Length: 301
Length: 128
Image (cartoon, rainbow over all chains, first blue to last red; front, side, top):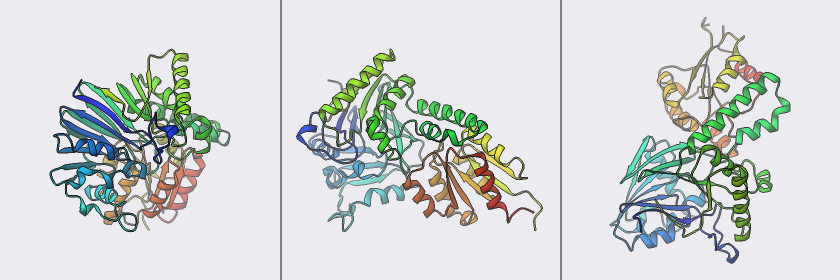
């Protein structure tokens, strides 16, 4: 078994869904572990980080890097119960959107305050480092990390992680093709010159989206909604899975993991989404491998 | 009363949006300065206050609202008139922008005339 792997600990968006009908896919919110040569990187701190923390304390590592895409509750709500934070022998390095270290600290600490929580982050005994978010590139052991702003309410990062000659891209929350849909919706209100300029803008944005996920060996990407739900929730900052699949094909991604599943979708519905995704890939004669991100799934790198 | 043309700054890396702004202000006697990145704009803005500043939110190197937060800490920009121009029309971004004292938030795609109108509105008292 490789000592370089990624593992899904939480795959849901919005809120935890610990229902019998959902557990083949999993009920915890966003959290992915990437491990290489004994170094641990964690993407997001949803409820999935709680069982991950319980597992980590059994091992030998005592330091980790935690990348937060943003601070919406489904991405940070596991932190108050993350056991390594409460153990003095641990070192936790936090990175996420913000203007400076103080901003990151403020956002990480905000949920652990009265009247929302009984103890604050001052109860954490681990050594906590807030990494300056203005750094262009991060290095954690053999893992090189860069980030880009993505399309989601508030400042939100997508991460590109290079490890063992493989590129893993983690974009948990992102509304694909947003400007294309906006232009299409308002097209009749634009004159010919404006339509031409905005057609150019749509092409630019599409190219920019492809660059963000281009050359990914593994893309873990928001695929929260069906078309029907996307139309109801446009502006919530999440993608329709059809757009996610098409973007991955256009960008030449090798393997796509549909992620950040809607908590209202049970195992059967997500299986239907997966089957349709495979049909799209087949119709487009693409070699893209598409999987459902499932809690507990481990992928060797 | 000054004799120089009002200065408008746009921070946006989209060639299409740059063309749209150039088209919008071409008959207004405005000096338009365009920067692709937050870092490039900072090199200018650290020493200069434009009459009006347009900021995109998703920039190659930084979130536009983070750039604005930095600018507001600078004595030169505590009262600079700023308009966010973004495809992100999320309520959270608009609220953040209002808290940072923007005078307007324009959502892409916007008509050419809309840019012309706001430039006239916010530079009216600064032109000769």
